[in-house]
Image (cartoon, rainbow over all chains, first blue to last red; front, side, top):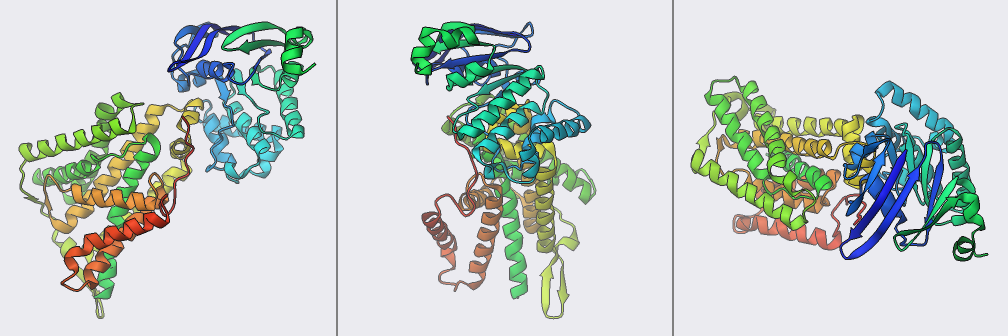
Length: 234
Length: 293
């Protein structure tokens, strides 16, 4: 469904991504793991069109989307939930959700979709008229995911959904990710919490210094010596 | 006399508020302080003059003039600012100075450097009185128009998808694009609104003076810029508060200062601005803005 070929990203003199190749099939969860600064978020940013690639190619559904504007990529059905949630703090939960669906669905369908989201995230119904900035970190993460799902994307890019959340909330978020997967959504997940990521993913790719150092099924990686020593502390 | 002064003060404040809002809307979304905003005002003034000379009835002429301001703002973005998208704040600022100077020269050489009289309808210069109070028709209309424009803008920003997207874009533009909402649409709407507000402000300004000249927009937009900074640059409620505050203080000082001190009015007002910024450097009602590299 999505393939990234020989992606290279540079910020000025700093080479953030040297070479990343990856492929995501329809309906699977791929986890992109690695240390801070390994190039995970930059890779997601390049797929979503927020970060320009120096070279390489991003193909979604057989269409080359490299270098397209973020809004064009979003309208093809790829939705990024950015790191740090980045919900609109001054807008109500309702307005945050409405913007998520505005360009993807006609008004009537958007209302139906919003109802589905409120069903999936009851906490958002409780705070429907509250400004996003007044929600807790976990609630904001729910809102960010719901906002991304509003437009019925075909693929979701999740950037560090566990960042800054209390342990029981992290479990809630990952239960949700597993549930989304069961509903057939394709997910590319960036996560520093490697153990959790490997639990929920089908396959995983390990990045270090902007390069793919290891890839395989989640089970294989969870038992590999490299991953156990470097990331799982075993 | 006091009632008349209060009406004048609120009326001038309303004009400053409309102009400051136009500057704030564009700044909140593209980070540009548009110094060519005054020329949008001037252009609307000349459009009103031209429409009246061509014999259009007054309401139609006003409609044409305000539309010209709005369209000119969109054209300005398309021609001058869009190619500069992503450029530094300084480059954008210099571009807006260039557009401003260019338009001033076009007005001076293409039309005339001297003020051109605009035939305002007689009823606008009239006054009505309740007992001891005499109130000018012009300033009263000005207050009503400003109030209606503020309400309409508020409804647009709260109730429509594009308006909501604009409030969101002022916080975090990139995430709005991640929702699939085109950047160009948001930016064009911001300029359209700023042009509409400049056009309306021009009508109110010309109505008080019955003439247009190439430098017409300079002083009011400078004041509006000060108002926007006092209110909190990029904050829309701040721009409105700053505009009214500045207009009201100016008129009240004008009315109360003794003749010997009157020439120092602007100096006194600006000292007040400095005092406000010393106490509240972010302005009266600071903008909510997520700064990201």
